[in-house]
Amino acid sequence: MFHHVKELQFNARVSRPDPRFANLLLEQFGGENGELAAAMQYFTQAFGAKVPYPDKYDMLMDIATEEFSHLEIVGATIQMLLKGVNGELKNAADSSEIMQVLNGKAAKEDIIHQAVFANPQFGVITGGGVTPRNSQGIPWCASYIHSNGDLTVDLRSNLASESRAKLVYEHLMKFTNDPYIHETLSFLMTREVAHYKMFEAALNDIQPNFPPGVLAADPRFTQQYFNMSNGADVHGPWNEGEMPDLEKEFIYIADPVKHVRETQGLTQLEDDKARELKQAEKLNKQMSQEKSTEVKDSEPEGVAQWSIYPDNNKTA
Image 1 (spheres, one colour):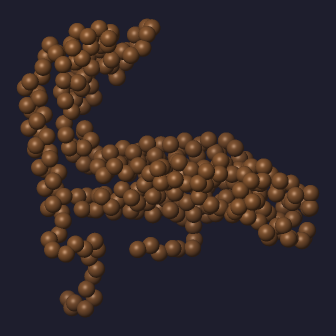
Image 2 (image 1 turned 180 degrees about the horizontal axis):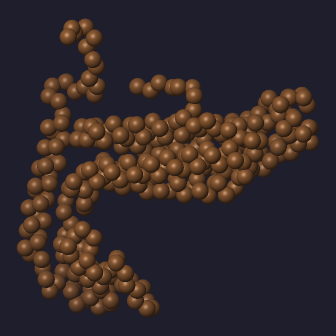
Image 3 (image 1 turned 90 degrees about the vertical axis):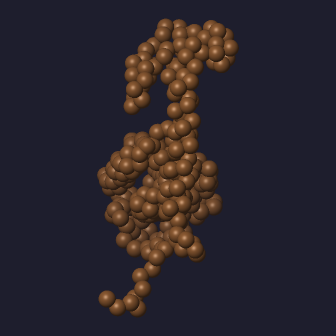
């Protein structure tokens, strides 16, 4: 159940109309890395988490709802930046507030021209309003949402989403000198950081969480780093030394073509990992059972009911 509170979470303000920046800010309204995409992503992910992870369901719904409030902040800011593009300005007298800001008729015509130049849809389709489109006028699309049905996968997607959104806000700050907008964007950017840490903590709270899904990785193919480019070999912690958290060493394959030919397409390896393969198969069965039981044990018997409502007729 949603209840709309008319006050914004953060008091969005602008110093003056700026249609060009309003168009750029649309990226965070209806763009791939914007607030609408984040809200719908976390909202969608929450349904699958309800039964096995009711605590994570609560977190996802809370953050999704906050993202909707951020969408409202972005939309309100865009609308204020477009002040003067809508019908009120087009019919306004020179003594109106917007005329005083814009210094008369010439400025009024210029601001409308800026809006049309920045995004023709402001003047032609939306009438100076906000719609879920990005800065190029492309409508918001559900393909922006990443929801895979495995919470550890979804949480990793969310870490990436928050990272991208933070970066977009950083870039947007470079295109405006309005101190009020900087305050708003700084708030929104910082909440991306906060959400990142929340998702990170939730992921760490699920153990084991690697590899994603249920099935274990094939031990025959987890350690090889294939040098797929010509030129000087480059080494680092991604292809030499101990693999993070796995207690195994990376194996650097300097000549992948030679290695593949010698091993008949990786089917005849010196170490067939027979013992580890049996362990992986055993782990697969164990994890399959655990994951299945985890969900089944969380589901109520009889009629399915999403919410439990308090019985106000009961006496203490």
